[in-house]
Length: 104
Image 1 (cartoon, rainbow, N blue to C red):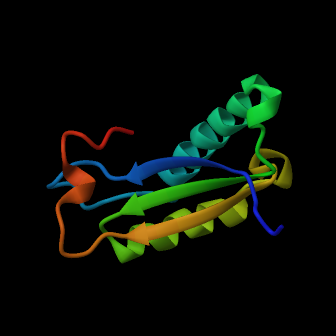
Image 2 (cartoon, rainbow, N blue to C red):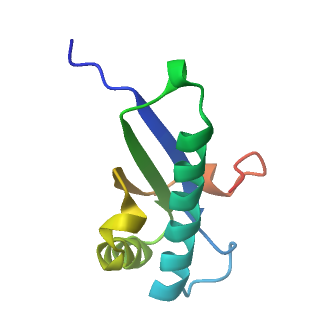
């Protein structure tokens, strides 16, 4: 029918309201950690809830951080990425990324 069951993990490339530096190594660490979580969830999910594709959605406040995340993604091996896809959102003009209710 064209429907896809999708496993999604959402995280932030964010280090607080006053820190404006971010490295590719930090991006690699974030992606590696979140991809490991997606892989673990896939192993432990009930068969009736199994998804056929995974998506890692990374929010950030900075265009240059988004570029670092994208570059870090490209540097990862296919074994680490598994069957996951990456989506990056640069948040502009809102405080949603920094609210207390938005946890890593």
